Length: 194
Image 1 (cartoon, one colour):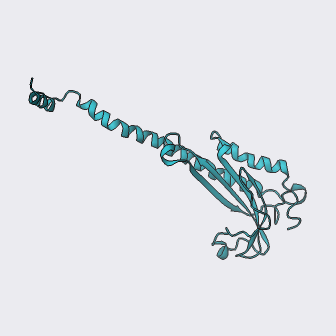
Image 2: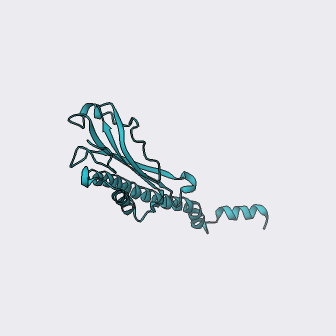
Image 3: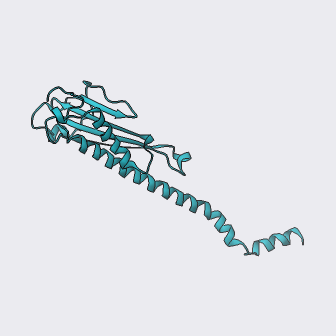
């Protein structure tokens, strides 16, 4: 057979066309399937981060002053709830912060106390510039000074299959809450009075 006959025969042949089409489409199907898996896991982690943030704020705002203040073991248990909520995802890449903010007006606030795991806590007495703009109109306090519990959780999620493309993804959430049973919450007797 000459070269031109082979070429015409190859052009007319339909044997193996399905295999070639599958070979072309298979990588895209596999990429779509693995991406869907990674996106689903990231969404699940994000929901757990939001739940952990709400749990930190809710547990902390139930403490008061005096004999029901937060001690060292109490704080370890409170932030330990984060790891329990994020399970089965590893807690090694989670940062939890609980901070009490003292508002002196609708626009001014300072850090009363702060506690963090796997990260730096805010400095007590430092100015707090993260107040939401809505606080100026909604006034979360009836009078000043007033206290707010600020909980935040950050989780570094690394996709199993797309990590080489996207790299780690930082999932964060934060929440303000008011103390439930007293004007403020003491952590290791700070503040000395509300």
